[in-house]
Image (tube, rainbow, N blue to C red; front, side, top):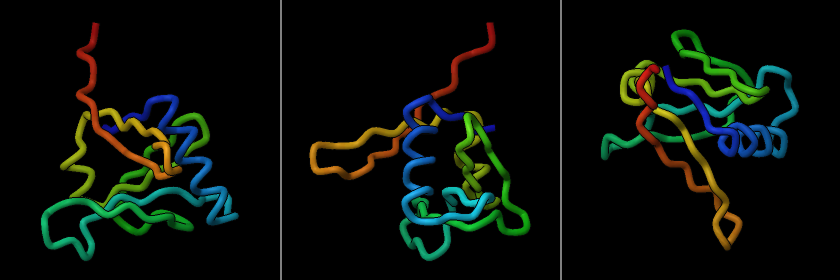
Length: 97
């Protein structure tokens, strides 16, 4: 299952807090409306039926079925660029030790 870096969980919480005020709010990764096969990231007030829920350090991420398969055992990272835009990236998960 997808995990988040500390940076990603902080940025997810900040984005959600700036846009929504419900307790169950989070970011939702889905393939809705994307023709290129990529994923769309939106704020969501809650998970939709069938969504996988990833919660880490108070940050909530909802993954539709396609996103859950595509992101599998990866690690979500995030950073803010010099213009204030958020850049998400995926890293391979570390093998279990």
